[in-house]
Structure formats: C-alpha cells, structure tokens
Amino acid sequence: MNNSGCRIGRRVLNLQARGLALRAGALVPAFALASVAMTAFPGFDSARAESMSGALVRAYGGNPDLNQQRAGVRAQDEGVPRAASAYRPTVSATGQYGFSYLNSREPGSALGISGGFGYKAATDEGVLGITATETIFNGNRNFNSVRQAETNVLGARETLRNTEQNVLQNGATAYMDVLRDTAILDLRKNNIIVLEEQLRQTRDRFNVGEVTRTDVAQAASSLASARSDYFTAQANLETSIANYHQVIGVDPAHLEPARSVESLLPYTLGQAISVAIAQHPEVQAALHQVDAAELQVKLVEGELMPTVSVVGQVAQNYNYSGETGFRLFNGTILGEVSVPIYTGGEVDAHVRQEKELLAQAELQADLQRTEVRASVVSNWGLLDTAKAVIVSDQAAVKAAEIALEGVREEARVGQRTTLDVLNAQQTLLNARVSLVSAQRDRVVASYATLAAVGELSADTLGLDVVRYDPTVHFDQVKDKWIGLRTPDGR
Image (cartoon, rainbow, N blue to C red; front, side, top):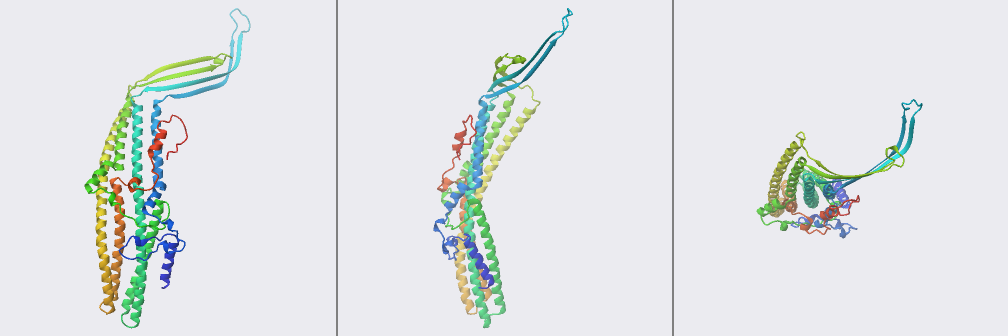
C-alpha cells in the first residue's frame, strides 16, 4: 500500500482504538462487509455490547433534556399548594420596642405663685401583636386558581410525555446513524482496497502493453475519489458518534442490529390518525392550555365581585404612653367587605383580553391537531417508501454484483475497458450504500411514526427501566401546609 493508503490504515486504527468501530455488517446481511467491529481487537469486552433497548434505557434515565423537563413538572406541581394556600388563614406577628422620654411642665397658677408643676419620665415601651386574616369569599378566585394550577400540572405532564417521545426517537435515530455510517465507512474502505488492486493490475497490464496510459489515469482517478469519499464517511461517522453521546450519554462501543417497531403501529393509516388526534401529548397539552385559559377568564371576572374576609388581632402594650408599668391588652375581630365600584376600566379590559387569549388557545389546539395529522401521514409515507426502497436496492445490489462480474470477465478478453470496470464497481458501491441508508431509514421511520401517533414510550417499547411517575411528587406536595425541604419524589 502507498503512503496515502498507510495514512488511511492509521486513521482506521485510530477510530478502532477510540471505540468508534461498530458492527457494520449487522446492517447489511445481504452482502459481506469488512467488519471494523471492536471484537477484532484483543482486550475487547463483549459485555460492553449495546442493543437499541440498552441505549434507549440509558437515554431514558440520564438524558439532560428529559431530566430538566421532569424538574419542570415538579416545579409546576408546587403551583397547586400555592393556589390552595389562599383557602388558609395568614398569620403574622409584630413587635415594637423603643425608648420613650416625656418632659411636661405646667406654668404657675393665676394666684401669682411663682414657679409651676413639672413632670419628667423615661421608659422603655414595647408592643407585641398577632394578626390573623381569613378570606371567606373573593368571587371564587381561590377555587378557580386551584383548578387552573391542577390543569397546568396536567399540561406539564403531557409536555414531559412529548419530551420523552422526542428523546427516545432521537436516541433511535442516533443509534441507527452510527450503524449506517459505520457500514458506509466499511464500504468505502473496501472500495479503496479493490481500487488499489485494480490500479496495480492496470499498471501491470500497461507495462506489457495491454492497456494505455489513459486506463492507468482512470484507475488512479477513481482511487483518489474513493479516498476522498472515505474521509468524508469518516467525518460523518464522527458526527454521528457525537450526536449519539449527546442523546445517550456515552460513546457507542459495539452496537447490535436493530429492528423496526412497525408491529407496534396501528394497522392502517386511518387508525393511526385517529389515535394520534385523540392521545398525542402535544394535542393533550394544547387542550389543557384551553382549560387554563378558560379558568383565567373566570379568575379575572372574580375581581369584579365582592371580597369578604375576617381579621382578628390581639396586641399587648408595655409601658403604654410612656408610663412605667402601664400595660394595655387589646383584642379585636372584624368582618371586612370590599365591593369594587369602578376600577377605571382596567379589569374590564383585562377580561376582554383573557377572552381573546382563550380564543387563541382554542385555535392553537385546532392547529395542533392538523400538525399531528400531517406528521402521521408524512412519517407513514416515509416508512412505506423506505420498505419499498429496500426491496429495490436489494435487487439493484444483486444485479450490480452480476454486472460487475461480467464486465470484469469481458475486460480480461479485451471486450471491456478499464473505465467500464470502474463504472461497474462504482454502481455496485452506490447500490450497497443506498441499501444501507434505506435499512437505516426504515427503522428510524418506524420510531418516528410511533412518536407521531403518540405511543412512543418506555412502556410501549418494553424498556427495562424504573418508570418515572410524576404523580409521586405531586402527591407529596399537593397538601403540604408548611416545610422547605424538597420531597424526594423524583
């Protein structure tokens, strides 16, 4: 192998040493590939082999996007006890302490007696008091506020479910991208080996006068292009590995073959559309937004209604009015009623604004249904296309293999040129690359279609994970009256 070939070999070994080489042949059972799997190297631990399920388990448990969304749901849970706190009394204590100095002097009497009467005092005054307020009625704002908080929690859970779908879909896509790009890298490497041999044979034939210098140049040009394609495939693989690490959390080591999940899909496109419109998390989240907007209208309308509350207060005064030892205890309980008469039109405008936002939320829900429907139809079509392309590409690979063998035989007896052989070799390579891509597309499209239907989840896939249950944290905090410690319901 020449110097360029040596450099290629070193880069392949670098990839393998870094754990980037995978079971490329698993993707394309229709033909043999020169495997760059790590099993070919001493010291490889077969226990590190990763399946699609194993990779998605890693993503489900450790993906940062999914974990931050779970934290967001837990934060949304706290909106319910915050809203419910309006039902409970508020109690505050006050205290005052200070120094009081009194200097009083009266003038002499009308009898002409000189001098007068004076009084001086210095005391430490103090006041301790407690005030309790309980709202009895405020236009049902407390009730609607709690309902709105609960609706927001349900909406946040649907957003979490959609994030889980996206993470699992991205994980499956990253997994298949690594398999595809590794297989293509293998094909490019094999092509270089074949073309190097083709160039050597062409030069030998040129030396004995069987071919011209043009044939040698054509073979050399094809080899140079093949090396360029190899380095491009190598860069694509490294990009796919980086994406894999981003979603899954670790570098791929030894990926096993992956299967399509078409068996989990509805039988027909019509059924898939019906299921998606009924249960897709984006549709459900939009419907919860409609409910929250409707409750917001009622909340603002409640500002136009009377507010009834009870206020109780007790206070103990020490050294009252600067007189040492003088104590005064005061206790009151009052009923308060506040009736808004005119607010300058601010509340009226606010109500109208919230009604428009409600109409917007309803339109957004309709838009979400149409987008989900379009996504189902699109991904269903991509899945059908990928299956059809696989059949065509398999036939193309078989035909190209037969054609290449025939062209080579004809070239040996002088009926074909070197260019004919190179073109046949390139046609076979392109067919194999297309087949690898189509096999990847079928698996990815099946996961994308399942996500579009709204059923891509750890439960549906049967992943061996500890299922994250958002209701655990909600049940821990919904009735809390006091406490700063964050519950462990994660």
